[in-house]
Image (cartoon, rainbow over all chains, first blue to last red; front, side, top):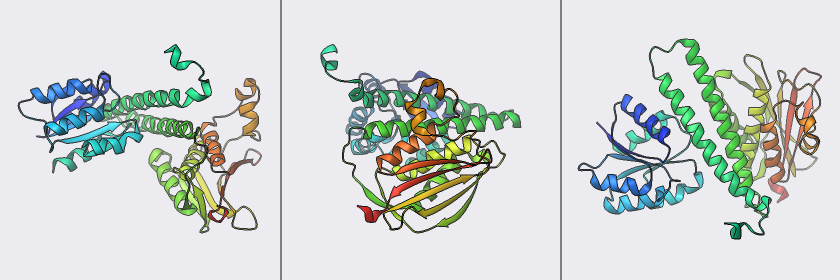
Length: 119
Length: 237
């Protein structure tokens, strides 16, 4: 079962991702509401998630910075960047994001990317 | 904060406001889209509810398209010199019609491509396909028929290769009076309150004008209408 860490500052979005992913058979191992919390959760996790779903505009630390730090901790981590900021795609990929999905997206598209990066 | 604001006009700050606003709206659209998907994953959902949910999904997609267009125009506002490329007008029409069908799958839109002459025009940041798509979205919103049929042709706008136009025609388009977009935008608010929904065509107009072209609207006595967008030909560079 593919495990996921969800990072987004919108509580409702986090809840929706979590519920839909669980319905589709994914294991949500954690959630975080900003980049710093994401790094803490990532560090604390005994087993690292297969995929991190990362938002960009968040308080304290943004998604690009958090992606960069997670990739420093684990250079083979798969990170799917999801953001309403299409202009940040290049920066996100340079930071180490494997995939980029502009918001709003359908969960089918996210799941397709998750399957692709989990292969 | 006041120190930073001093001396900056609303016009200068508008792109930043629009960036923040569009970011919030796109996030709101994400929550709506995901909520609908969550509800649709229930096997007990009846067909009528599923149909409504699919239509609501299309509304979110329209809102996203309009918002992204506004944001793009605001970001381009301060660019005095656009970095241009040349594109095939027929290919841009194809991009726009494919996007329209995926935004509004339940409308059963039919296209009649009448004369897709090979023409190369000046583009920048996908404004050609986006202007056609915004106009098409607006056209379908103003067409209440079950399965709108839109005929699309590419024509020479002048005697030489300097200008080309895309003509979108729809016999189901509901436009009660001739539409003068400039008067609607610049005229009294009262006039605006009596117009039909026009956001898509206004965005299209701004995009076409950004590329040095123009847009015209024709009404056919309540029996449909046409939007014609004129673009600079590649030879005009």
